[in-house]
Structures are given as structure tokens and as C-alpha cells.
Amino acid sequence: MHTQLDWSDVVTIREALSRASSFLRKQGVADPMFEAELLVRHCLGWDRTRFLISMGEPIPVAARDQLAALCERRSRREPLQYMFGTQEFYGRPFHVRPGVLIPRPETEILVEQLLCRAEKLWPADQSLQVVDIGTGSGAICVTIACERPHWQVSTVDLSPDATAIARENAEQLGARVRFLQGDLVQPLLEAHERVDILVSNPPYIPSRDVDELDDEVKAYEPRLALDGGDDGLDCYRRLCNALPSLLKQTALVGFEVGIHQARDVASLMKASGVIDQVEIVADLAGIDRVVIGIRTGRKE
Image (tube, rainbow, N blue to C red; front, side, top):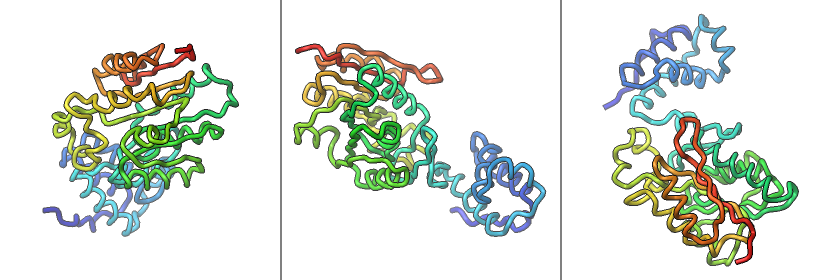
């Protein structure tokens, strides 16, 4: 049972940082000083420079009490991103809250790869039909729409909560995105739509492993966005099976994948019969993270 921390003896910003860091360390947080600084700065609304030159100043009572409350929440492993309500992705702030997966830096590689590959396949001014399967916070679809405003970007998600949050992000960032609700590619198949680019960061964690995840992931982030079935590949199978019905003659496909999944997903792409080239791209940690498939436009 958690009770409100009494930090009434904390007077200065330096004392607040020390108390927060000490508390988080005792609670087993991996990087207590780093997180304590983020929490103090969040409560004050300050950037790092102002924070560092003001350590000896008194901390406002409201900020101190907010800090104590946030530290308690963090001790229960609530993710900082949900506590702050935002996460940066591709240089832009995205609203996040329970109901959507928190955007990860690795997913930026997927977006970057798609934008780069598209430049080689089509003229820069060509308007392309793009679909992002699994909207989440909108990190992928909104970023693509911001980076390439002349493209026609659609996105599909089963979760009304995720769609609502993604709409907020599209509005605040001025992105033009068409939102569809449904199960993976079903809305597109029903409408007989074909696309130039299909991108997805689907659930890819094997069901048996979801309960072994860190508390801050399994207790707060939506299982729907994590659980990829027995072997983690359920969504990839469905997506790849649908590629012949979804892709135009020249097309680009990009998937983010989990550890040790890249070769299996690449094989699923090839087995679709419509992908001519497949490439696997590693993330900064050297883990194979993105699988790119290209349909070169040859006649069937």
C-alpha cells in the first residue's frame, strides 16, 4: 500500500534531486540519477541548462509535491513516458498514454529506411499510396505524412483508444492521415485498395514471453500491441499472405521485427510470391530489426 511521500523538509532543487534519486535507487530503478533529473525538470518545466544553473534555488512547494507523487508512481514501474504524457519520435513530440505502445527509437530506423528506399523507386514529387498497419500512437503514419506531405497516408488499427490518440497527434503535428478501424489489412481488402508502400510494426513478442517482460511494459502497455501469437509471427503471416492482393506493380514493404525473427519474416515475404528483393537492416545495437521488401515492377 503506497502512501503520499512527505518531502516537506526538502527546500532546494538540489535537495529535491538528491531525495528523488535516493528514493528511486532504493526502489530498484536502473538509472535513478538520470530519471530523478528528468522528473525534477518535468515538475519545474525547465530545460537542462536552467536546471543546472539553478540547483541552489528553492523548489516551489507545488513542484516538490508533484515530484513526490511522480516518484511514487515510478516506484510502481509506471513508464516515464505515460507520466509525462509525451515521447519524442523522429524529432517530434507524440502524445502517449495507456492504450498505446510507447514509440521506440528502433522504429525510427523503419521510417528512415522506407523514406530512403522510396526515393530510389519513385520520382520525388510522385504522390504515393501508403498504409501503416497497426496505428498505435501514430508515430509511423504521422511521421511519414509530415515528412512527405504529398503522399496519401492511411493507417489501420483495431483499437479505438489507439486511433483516438493517433488522431490527436496528427492534429497537433499538422499531418494529413486517413484513419481506418479494423483487423490488420481487412478494411483495405474489403475496399479492394492497392498501395505503393505498406509498413507495419505489428505485435511480435511470443505469447509465452509477454508475461516475462519488465513490469513497466507488461503492466502498463497494451497486450494487444505486444502479443504476436505462439511464435510471435502471426501478424507477419497474415500481412504477407495479403501482399498479392494489396501491392501495386512497383511496391515497397517494411516491417519492424523482434530479435531472431528477421530471417523468418524475410522468408514469409519471399513466399508471398510478389516480393523480388528482400533486405535485413540492423539497429544500432546490431540486432536485425527491419525487413525491407521491394516489388520491382516486373510483369507477373
